[in-house]
Amino acid sequence: MAFVDETMNAWVVDEPGPLPSSPIRWNLRPVPRQSTGELLVRVLACGVCRTDLHVVEGDLPVRTRGVVPGHEVVGEIVACDPANTGFDVGERVGVPWLRETCGHCEFCLRGKENLCPRSRYTGWDADGGYAEFLTVPAGYAYRLPGGYSDAELAPLLCAGLIGYRAWRRAEVPVGGVLGLYGFGASAHLTAQVAIASGARVHVLTRAARARELALDLGAASARAAADEPPEPLDSAVLFAPVGELVPVALAALRRGGTLAVAGIHLSDIPALDYHRHLFYERDLRSVTANTRADGLDFLRFAGQHRLRVTTTPYRLDRADAALRDLAADRVDGAAVLLPGG
Ligand SMILES: [Zn+2]
Ligand SMILES: [Zn+2]
Image (cartoon, rainbow, N blue to C red; front, side, top):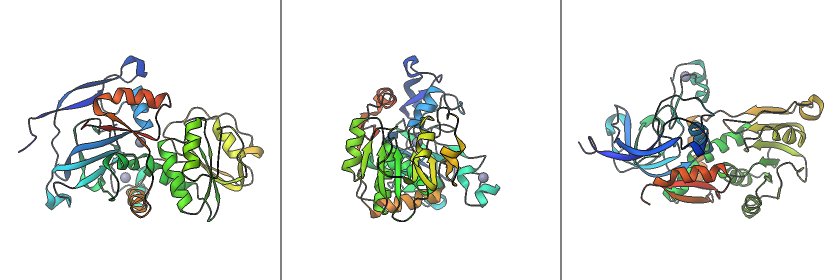
């Protein structure tokens, strides 16, 4: 069979640590083999997500030694069994963060598979897309909307999807006012979803270029991260992994407002003042991964509303540079790795 015994280039996490200690290594590995029910996918594009930084730098505990990071993968199926996967060779698919759930725990049965204690993740538990090939269980791969390039689709698979769940968790009322704290890959997509759904969006973020992009995409205002928005917020999403912004965003909410924290990792939250930050039934919520239903809904939305996806391309063999640029906030929109060069 094709690909068996062949090798591929891949980045592996040797010893997680700060980026200057070169925690990832570019090396040759065997092309993986798909198990029953899995697809073998040739990577066409892989987004670089902040969670990859947390995997590489060790903010997230090691789950698999020598793992290949990357969970915003767009690729072409090069091997699968159509009878037990429902896919065909040659189809373009997306491989997201959520790789597997148990299917029978109380959370899985209640439609909250994102909380499954036995869930597994691409680029953390299993090898991801910082490589030329990867495998994915067919039930967790997505068919992708047309009208987008491979590079544009990649960030939809985590940045877009998690932003979509965070937007839902923030429960913006019809015609309501939404504040977005931080404006990177995820927020620039979420802003477009919210605006297309009728919300007025205020962006609060430190980088001047990101504020320009926000206004360009239709935000009603863009200010520095700790500034007060021009009007009280019904809802807010915190994208910046900065705990100090939690009280800032809570204080900007109206009565009954909701703040959703989108990140998987957040620096310490300072002490909250009950009356200033929480009273009047303001809610503070986290967001944990996403369900497949979120993914299907979001990708359908992206098929119906052409989202503008800002990407900065890197060659696959420059993933280390992409991670450094992301850590230093030097990336416009989403960094995307392209194996083709
Ligand atoms: Zn489960
Ligand atoms: Zn991600």
